[in-house]
Length: 143
Image 1: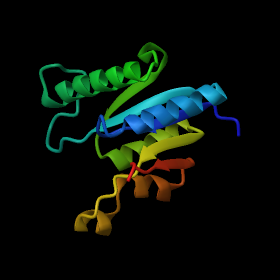
Image 2: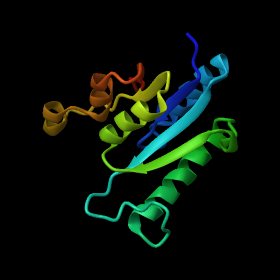
Image 3: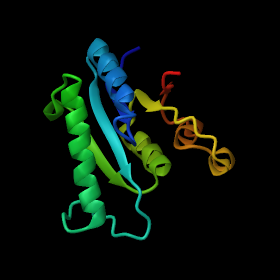
């Protein structure tokens, strides 16, 4: 399989470090470019993530810092990795990003939640898989 770009979808750190670690391993094996995506979902707020004086802007800065620190902790140079912070529903944004950037693989973590709403509506991972825009590697957390 020829992997040109791999997308790592992260929502919570340190839980999603397993996603970053596995994605870094696959990217190194295939000499693929890596994009790490995090979605800030704060309904009712201005989605301008570039402004430091807004809650979404501060959330985006904090997310970028956490991702950079996690990558550094895993021995990767964040400067060589695209870190993308977007606003909106994680599932909808990930599907849109996959359609636009056409990654050859998406790596995500199974959250294994059993909340009724998640079972009825489906998780972010379920929705990205159902959209079929790219192959998805779902990582399970250790038992």
